[in-house]
Image 1: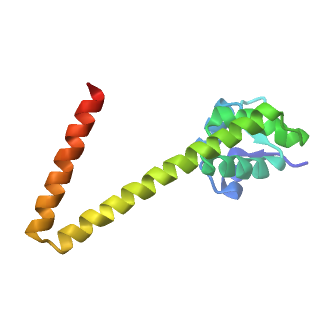
Image 2 (image 1 turned 90 degrees about the horizontal axis):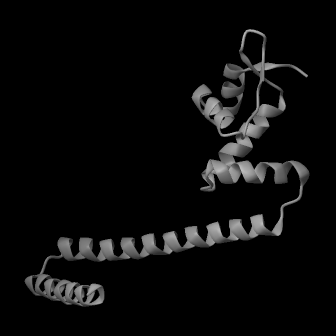
Length: 140
């Protein structure tokens, strides 16, 4: 097994050395230290960093990643963890739906703006006023 310096791991995994230091601070990547204090990693560190990057790109926080990595190592995930991951996926699905609705409404505004008709503007103002009145009543 060859020891890799931090710069070598960063280059091979295509991340910054700063990211590697952060992963170490979060307890999701481990390095040995030379007598002079330099970090050295085993060959497996490159794949580990790629996995960590994949988990981050899935929207997981570092504390969640720290819980998942031992399960990846052992090939066993407790039911609570799977439930938590399903809950996170459901949250992301909800955010996507909200964003799609916002995009649909923005498309309507763009269409109204590009094809401006005074009657449409009056209707939009009336609808906005009704929505504001409803929302004010809900908060009361």
